[in-house]
Length: 455
Ligand code: UDX
Image 1: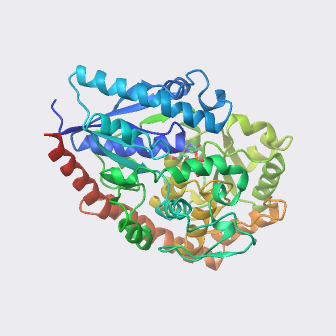
Image 2 (image 1 turned 90 degrees about the horizontal axis):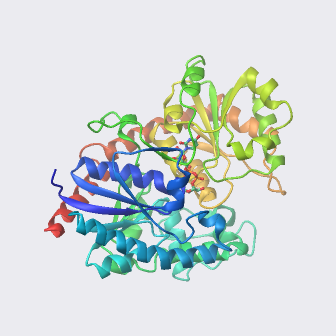
Image 3 (image 1 turned 180 degrees about the horizontal axis):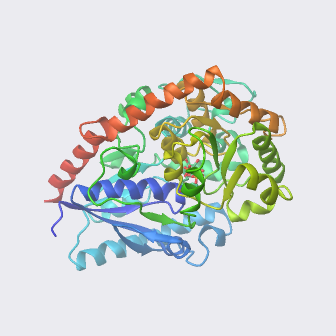
């Protein structure tokens, strides 16, 4: 079959970054663009679930046996990834050409800005794919251009950034507010280092959700929002032949969740998940367990196997079997879509946040690190889709606070307003990706331009 163009997709090898790029790839493929995903050898080795409709080829980050865990430091990982990654990505481009599939464009995660140099070497177009919200990207941009000087000196210092509501220092991404994260911040700030030389800046968000900040950033870069990158099987309009595909380092417990949820009343269940990376302190895990118990709600809690030992003694045997189900991983969208879900207690990773918005699920925000505090601020104060649970001075969220937040969202007057807002955002998210919607138009424009440069 002949294709309009060929995109090489280069994700940063973590679950939360692969997911949106895979979904975007599927959309491009449905528009007759050939896709090859370049994933690191180690990431491919850790896959528990590997069924995708797109081709995957291996490159190397220089740590084929252990990925970042094998590197002596984060800085060493990034440096070696640049060196080995540039070479192996170049080799892949040459191999694909030899096989008769020349690449036209590299769509890369801006955590790996060196991909632009590889693209230039071969005369290819390039597109940065930002997997986080435009608001968060804008904060990193302001650190990059030197306007935002952090860490803040006062706890509640107010920060004004064009395109954003006023935020406090506790709302900025953790890499900005904690000086120990200097290396990670350097990488995040470097996302902007090559943007002058590229063709598109794609953002996994949608215009209606982040209008002001998108308008502001569009003055600087050729921004195109293309989200939410939610699989079409969860939208009203499905792509032909789409089904639940997985590129996952965890094996989902597929049947347990829907079987259990089918027996719960409508809007009665609290779904609890902290994504693929976050590790909770044992004390926090205990507070969460008792907070869930005292809320007296049914709950479905994703506790990754590496976190399980932190659950209170007898929790699984006694409490969880009475009121809840604890699983090590699930198909989160399948769960969020279920009519029995009443609220999502989430760490506010950007994928989880966008998935809750797209499926209209009210949130209790329990941000831990990275971009999560900013996302939580937006969820509560800008989109009115949830409440943010506040930690104590030790950084722990206490059981009473958790219980109260769940009740506010699921029982009280405020919860009704949140539910109404959730319905509104769900509608807008769907319209954005539906034919003629803001993100759909952007994807169409991207593909049309790609086709013209491919000939
Ligand atoms: C990381 C960062 O922590 C996050 O803040 C950043 O925005 C993206 O990268 P992660 O912590 O894994 O990601 O969270 P999130 O962005 O929410 O992504 C998790 C993904 O895993 C979601 O797509 C979610 O649907 C999926 N998931 C989670 C499952 O499929 N099953 C589960 O049981 C839990």
